[in-house]
Image 1 (tube, rainbow, N blue to C red):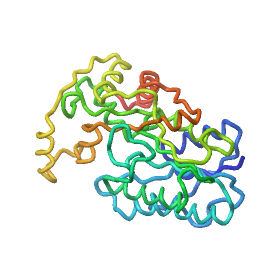
Image 2: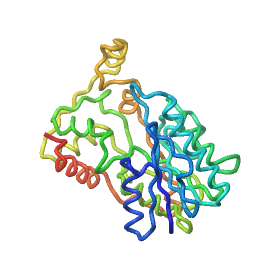
Image 3: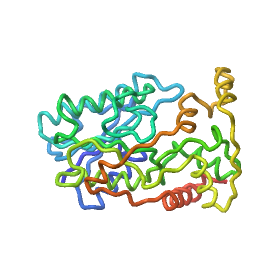
Length: 299
């Protein structure tokens, strides 16, 4: 099968492209402009499937325009292309489109809580169009808290754990559902034509729900380090945020919510369709910490 993968230079996209090639598919990766949007005309006309894993995360100094181009502009271009060619679409979205809530389901109403989530919501809606989320030929996957070898976005969290002292927001930190990147790749494979997840909207998550503190302890164990968990009151962190430019760069309102408030998806719909995540947290964290150590990211 000829498959076009956007965002193949990134953490998740590169793993997806590699998995699909290893499965025997002909994979073509996308061209990027300096601002992250898809170069017009770069989608192969004979692509049978387009996997859209492109996305621009928010953060300090990231213009809203860049997020709009990547998170909504690329889906719009793909929708236009597929409307003309009939290619199938597998789109990677985010659970954040329904807000930060525990047991978020595919039926939870849209309630994006930041610019990244708002632009991803727009992209998801563009691809789903006016029809039912369960209609073909679009499959939307919302992978939850993705981590694994090659991920630098969550490196500070794992590096802090490897250092032996891990600050927690509140007494235990948020409950989350870490998803090893290979489970995301498996979900993409299952979304190909004829697959168990082909056509529809699915939350994708790992088999375990753990606290941020649990995740830190597991990471420390992988490098032979006993981790001391240090609870920090939320009120103290909120006061730090009021310092503006003097606030520590590692602290932000989004990070306070992500690591301090319970948020994890329900994967019941994907499981009912026959998809089962295969990477429990201990195995996934072990692989991730091994990669960080081999790449010299851990001291």
